[in-house]
Length: 394
Image (cartoon, rainbow, N blue to C red; front, side, top):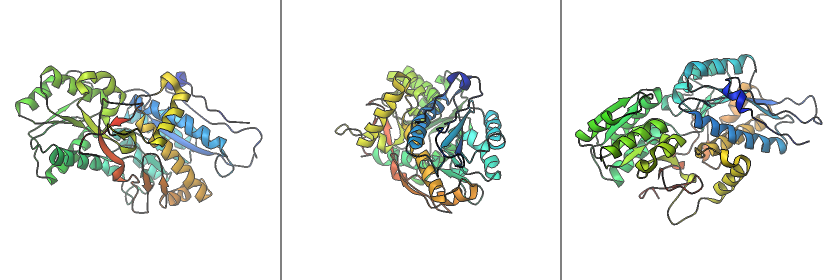
């Protein structure tokens, strides 16, 4: 009997979402299922990240279970909405650990959520593959059970600083970021990366993620004669920066972290964002003379067939979720166990080829993404969720 996965959006919106892939009736009763706890936003500022994760999980878990599951058992997952709120994230993680006894936890796409929940999961000695990009989150000595398959802020910042100075040959940027942990760790990393190439920002502005008019901040950058806007926030907020710059006829390059590739930026910025670029997975980019990579086209086709018009516009993160779950299952198979220490040890020897990157870990290296997997791409100029790389990043 084939296994199917059904997700109740009504349950998610009620804040009590629980998803489980149930075993077929014909399999052995003694086989232990492998339970993945997922904490990610389905509401709030980062909702599109969680919805995209939900869509990716539905596909990959179903495929893996149809292919035989794991160590004789099936893969289950329990999804909790952190509501883009650290307190909600903490409550979700505690429930996953105490009530559901999950074997691993995956998620925390938002850095402020990851900061709040990381010590709890680590203390429980449960492997945690997080997606939050704050560089300091991954420290094998401090948090030995934490791993990351995503990029981190230092990686993004170094790429932006190199492009700004080497390709654009500019010298006086304006930086604008939100006041959250994500915005502040990102802007701090960006200033440090710029300093390494001899550049000091002309001005720096901050804003609350609830602000809807950022004209004042952008005007001050303009008066400081900034020759580019370097922004660090989630998509909807950065769209407000782009729209303010357009209103003020402040026609300078706009560059940001991966937040500008979120659905919120694409939908809200519109024409104001057509010249903005941001960090993006290289595998999801193309030049104007090439197609998207074949494996990405195949993956997008599967996702489109499965989800149709409901498919998230933040699709780049879906492939990372697919890679992460396959990497995790491969490690658990090698461990022949769902025990936390066994899975942790297997992850520390993982060398996995995914769609997004080659992921390599060791006991002293818990950031697995290859820095070469990251590039810069335009927000507009998409082809089935694949972005056009900026000149000079080929």
